[in-house]
Image (cartoon, rainbow, N blue to C red):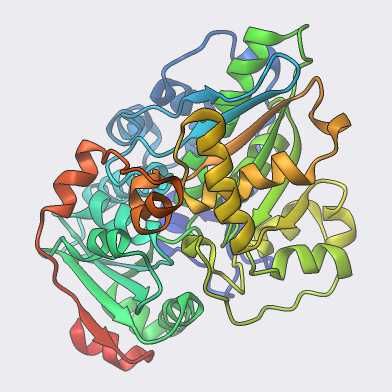
Length: 437
């Protein structure tokens, strides 16, 4: 399969799209066509790596990686994405737990798949110059990318994160690596980090000299594996419950840069049994305001409790528009709801009182949408899934005072928190980054 730019650029092979990150015209790579699957194509509940290999096979046809796909999936997707039931028989609600990877956040799926894919590309090409992976992060992405690429031959990673705008445990995960990982705390906000990354890729001479690659959700190699857990959970649930609640699952996805939500849109477009798709945002209202007004107005981000979603200019809106059209067309496919910090706090408390389950601020945005912003008629008789994007222990300083209890820390996170940190604080300009490379 070939890939083209959202702005109409020439077709390229999968390996070229993955290594370039963005297209030369500034657009984002998307497949030239999406495969469309039937219910009969997935008739048994496979382990996630085997499901991924079957789902993603068409995207790898004709690529130098075609024979490597099964191994890439086995290497990268070696942890589960289970559904946890929270609902009653009258209203089926599930959490899609995406935090069982090495850094306890959903970003592990995309980052590990991308790292495994890039490593195979570098191996096939026999490149002598290391690939420099640039990642701008509002919290979880950088940690997942650093963990996935740490000590991988032929790569070095530059993590750009906003100074003072991530949680303490997030920052520890961003800065505890060393070796081939360079962590830089940027004086500014996430959008400044993203602007710096885009500026470096736009400078073609610099990009070529440093052999730049992107690991943000602008990279199509991140989005392909993220579509897997939406496809798999909707398919598995439909097989188990067909005739009971109908064939569709309906998803509420907490979103910032729109990568995770767009992956769900891709799974829906490929024919999987996905009904409604609701984009849950925090106080950064760029997406819901656009759907309401039709006027795309990126703005500076606002700091919130759900810091990984603090994005004022979501890059993947360009992909969503390319898939489904402008605001008028998008309103037929998706909805978006904004949740305040006060509502996030209240939902964390309420969910712990209901189920005894501590949830992170991002997951709480999705739960608030389900509990408070859906009509009874929308909930009744339907299976709703809220994407639980990170483990609550990553936000202990927010969650523990609200629930009045300590949150058990996953073993993988405990190991990372024991490692020493190393990072530098820089001004938000490209020259400072280049100097450190």
